[in-house]
Image (cartoon, rainbow, N blue to C red):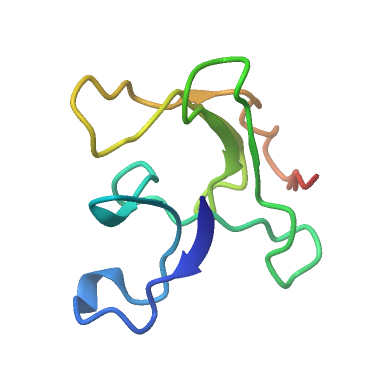
Length: 103
C-alpha cells in the first residue's frame, strides 16, 4: 500500500485529497474511507499520518484525518464489500485546544 495525493486526479471534487491506495492484480484502488484526506498537521507539512495495523485485520490501518486531526481506525478496504465505518481512537479536544498526532 502506498500514499498518494489525488491533486492530479481528473475528478475536481478529489483535488488535493491524500489517500491510501492498494495495488493488486486489478490495479490501484482507493483504500481510504470515502471523502477522507489522510494528513497530519503536526509538523505543518503532513508527515506521519498513518500506520498499518495488520494484527487488527487484513488491510486495517490507523490514520489522522486532515479535517479534524483526530486519529481513526479503518478495519479494511473502505470501498470493498463489507466495509465498516472508521472508529475514532482519539477524543475531540476541549474547546480552545488543538491536538495533533503523528507517528
